[in-house]
Length: 623
Image (cartoon, helix red, strand yellow):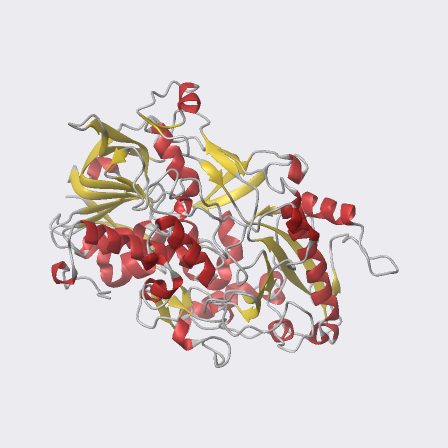
């Protein structure tokens, strides 16, 4: 009998056996009772669970979802929103490194990926951006299909995944646009669940700082301005594709046409020649992730293999399968089966710099929660005992802002705008409700002192990099070249972002009233005329910039993929994840990927001529 893993929030796991009549969550590829499925989805991050769920709604399709990491229910802290700062140190966090580059003073830059069901949605900071209207219109152009436009997506797939939930402790009236949000989808979205005094000061609408004008809802098409953060939290707990599409009503374990395989790494997609001389994906090879010298198991796909392993691992799997640039593959003695010179190219990522600001200790923040002995443990106990309420139900960040360089900036004489348009940001300001520890050597504030973290981020990068192979083993991480700050435009955007953040933090009336001042880092200073030395600002940024963990675009539609997400030169092999966007997502990519997966699943069903009448009533989300 196949093994099936059960877990609850209060216990790590209980191993049990079930009848193979139902689906299963297997934790060993040798235990999988079926060797053939219709669809195999590789990677259970932002898109994989959604795709697998929607395809499994078709009664006659048997679907397998494969994840290199473990069952997320073995890590109960994932569910607690205010535990997010702790999650990078959990065993399901996998750290890769971008290679050193001149723009960051020759430093390697770490990037964290989630290695569990849910992928990076299990350890991120919950932030929802649906993208600007222009982002989707631009993507529709790449797809050569107007059904991907914002006008078509806004009331369909940009709402389909979403269930807006009222905050636990305050009213959301005037802080979002109800008509822009779904109310019956699998993933809960809300505003903050705890209102701190620092959030009220940061979010004061009449701040008088140009570019920080209040925008009621950045997810209603126009992102620019200062807004309340929308988070993938509902009823006090993290909400993501595993809670909504796999575990809800035991979807992953209650269906006879859907299995999940965890702790299993896909090493390659096996191709076969077609009768016309082309190539078709017919199976995957998989090994036990944590077992040295694991045996290799082959699982066949009657219809398709879909890679949803993310912007770093999807191109890695393609290259290991003999799909890619011949010279790159030849260096590792990998035979080229399909030449595709765009695999792993066009890699982008968002980058950010943390700044720290001290303010009056009479203004509340979450600082005491993490620093004063016993506070976090007591708040966590309250969360468990009182139906996921209290301070641990809050996603730690309440305010963000979105900005553009001025149209008359001299930099535009030499560069084309990398953003989708005038409603889309070049950079973001993200304002936490207290001290958020990061990679910089900033002293932890003493008890009784209150310090707030604000970051400024490059959202529309001009720089491009690539993903390539370290070895011919899927168990080795890929080699990542990002070329961060490799051009004058990216430097100009980050330089302007720094200056505007300092102006906001020191001159906004509500922040002046609580005596906000820089803390911990030696910031570049203005001279007597209020001007900065730009070289000093650039040096500060280069010394301190880090990845936001938002890699994208390394298997882009239009170059690597066709407009149906099919890998060019290979039948029955698609890539559907952040790597497919040809340009960097306009904002935190999580919810854009949810919409992408929902729409792509419908596209696949349409290709096989399946409609609503073919769906099974067993699915809890018949939308």
